[in-house]
Image (tube, rainbow, N blue to C red; front, side, top):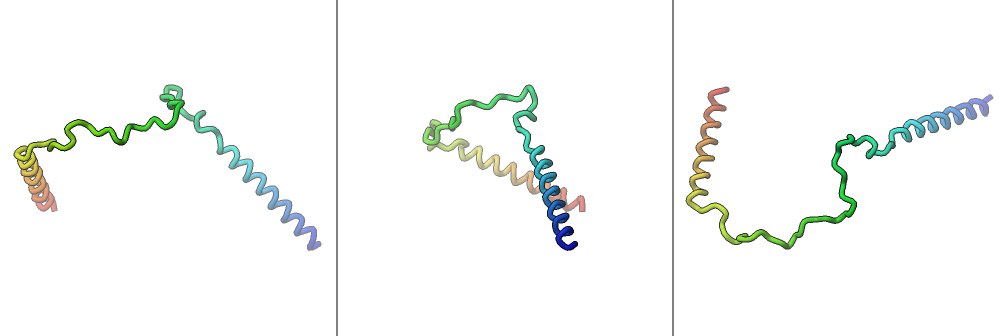
Length: 91
């Protein structure tokens, strides 16, 4: 009798594994099939990276002149102060 129960447990475990394998195998469908019909196609040739060593021209010059930079920083500081006082008033 003991051997029969072990055999039934073994069969049950095997059936559970087969069912789990079949269920998980159904989830492994192709992701390309799930893409919408109007999706943009991927390029066929891999490795089309942007050039790393090509720097834009005028890289050494300042982008924003110092006087405009100071003006922008002052405006940002004033906006920060206004938000801080508004947050204090809201509490």
